[in-house]
Length: 135
Image (cartoon, rainbow, N blue to C red; front, side):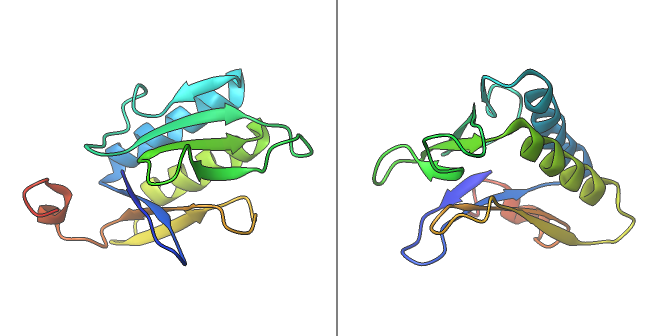
């Protein structure tokens, strides 16, 4: 998992094999059941440079939904999600992980202008790209 800031289309890129993606799917499912706050890194989603905190947010709450940097230039992100969205996102990632297709991806977003989109990908990158030596 790595945050890729951009002036136009910032993304949180999550790459991995099926078992790696299931770690994300399981964390989102757990969040959908318990709500509150959760750190994806503490749930086993691996990253060398990015931290993502899930925060329960009602759809009509005061803050914008979606994934946002905690501060300008920060690699720490806050993902404001209703628990229902987390359940949907968990299912999307689990379905991608379980697919027989050799490669694929899904984009997780709350349809809020300017939010950081989460791109989850399997089989679309060479294995060596997943190591720190290449990045």
